[in-house]
Length: 386
Image (cartoon, rainbow, N blue to C red; front, side, top):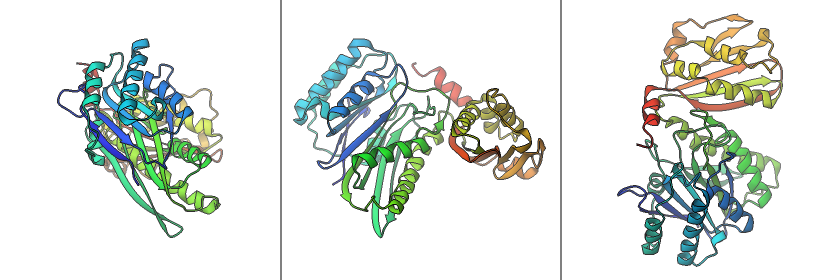
């Protein structure tokens, strides 16, 4: 049995679906990871407490209002929603996970939400696409995927929805995601898989370098397909498939980055440490000069090298650094290589740009996906609340 979705009109947005209730199967198991922001929203804090008490039966999501930085009233509103839902659904309040996304610092229209829940019959199920639309904020398109893989001659399935376009920063983004598989997972493997896959996907994307207050990724298994994950080869293959799905889904957020025209894949390889590789990838993905060069389709590799060299607390051997853009060697041995070629200039017109920085001093690597920075990004975010 798969999870079921019901989209809702809660009254936060005018005449639009702005809510989603996910019915999790009886034998399912769910884990979540959420934002590290010190101003985490009320629903994030309460959901972390709830999932520590019980395996959730439902996930409730509202869009259009983040319910973050809303004080005691914000927490009271979350509890009122949970109490209303638990009464309607005949479950305990801590068996519901709640997520919110939207504008920070505004109280929820709680009476509208209360009436919408009370009057809802919860008997008309929605499609994956309709569910993805219901949780959108500044997104230009709904983000949803399904994919089938074969492991040990058995077909396994993944499906998921997510939202996000701005305030995207490694270690979660202003995004929400629900991902489901049918592979049987125990608690240990569930946590391992979620953390492993999120580190390669939702924790490795960047649009503007700002961490949100509401980020949350939930991962559910319906526990219907047994592929013997005690076998190390099978476990490794499963993690490869799962991470492929997570990356595919999270890449839609970068593609839809507010005003974005390009998705840039940055690979920092042969680093002395993983920490150094992560620091470099974040520095370069946050560089406004690098991002605007990508938008302008400008093969200005010097902006990337300058950003790398500005990290004073890292040891870098200049003579060993190699820079590739779209598989074209631009910089090596401390001097330019094929950086001024027509081939490189032409390749910058692609919607997907690949950058490789080979440090040549170790065995660690980090990949990160980020977007360019356009005029449209400024336009969208200068008028977000109006």
